[in-house]
Image (tube, rainbow, N blue to C red; front, side, top):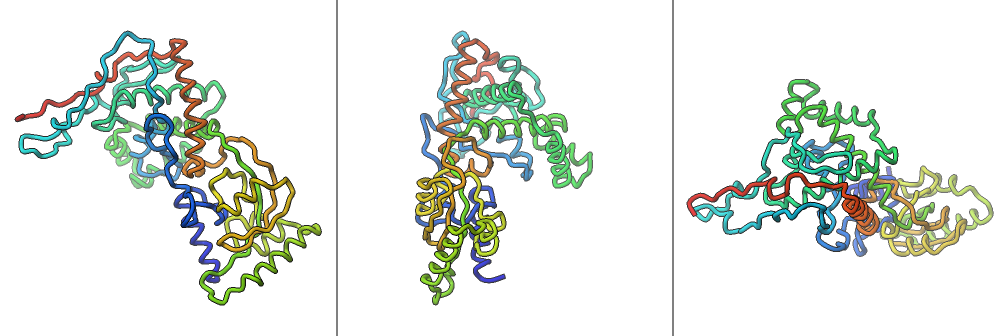
Length: 390
């Protein structure tokens, strides 16, 4: 393998770490030191929202699965609930978090009331329910209980909407996840696995299966209702070798122009990409970059892609070298087709401007139709320990 191969493999590794996908070219904006990065946080819309967390089936520590589900759907601004007036959540006096010796005591933070195995209904949502056990498992001491309850209501609405649309979890994937978790966390032993599930407050395998099913459905719904303008292009990259001080840009450009002429005369783009492209992420795929939104490519490349006509060929220079680009499909508004894009700046912006308004409208419609009933007010779901010695 050449030094240049190592260089572009490194670009791909960095890109995968930032965006969560590894089949895109090193023309992505998140590889550039002086541009917008895909892992920058999108500008918030409205009130502050929890950062989007996606549980991919790589099976991380299972606690992540058990605590992240509610935060897949950030809470919308508070909406009136068709309920008699309920007391608001208790305000937290920071001074009460210190013990008699003026030492911070996390045990004085508000904590959830109940156990994770509780099946008590705390909210009715359409034909479904929100259980106290889910609230207990997901509640972080000191957090706003009203916000978490609202998030759980949104998730139940999302699950019911998915069922109505025929979107279901892939059971083969779920069972594979369970086996992977069992193997990695318990060495495949049933008793150890049960102890592990109990320790992380998931309960049993049936509840784990339910959580994984819901997580998969939630991700699919987020992908479906997060829409953004995307274009599809392919390219051939002739990369400059930054480690070679004698690198000849003129010769590289001449080679790119020669390839461009061959393409204009009818040469097969995919074949030339496989033979000449220095982009390991797309070269073997004939240069195809797939559908991609704005914000993922360096500016000269992106400007070309989103201004070209379908079938047009264009030679563009970026800091990586020379690219011969062909636009395969014109920009259009379409759902995301890669979960990794949700971690990019463009994906987060699309999530905030398309998915969030959609889930908020879904909740407002349910409230207007009196399909949401809070059975246990949020302030009764937590308790604030009495400070001692104050």
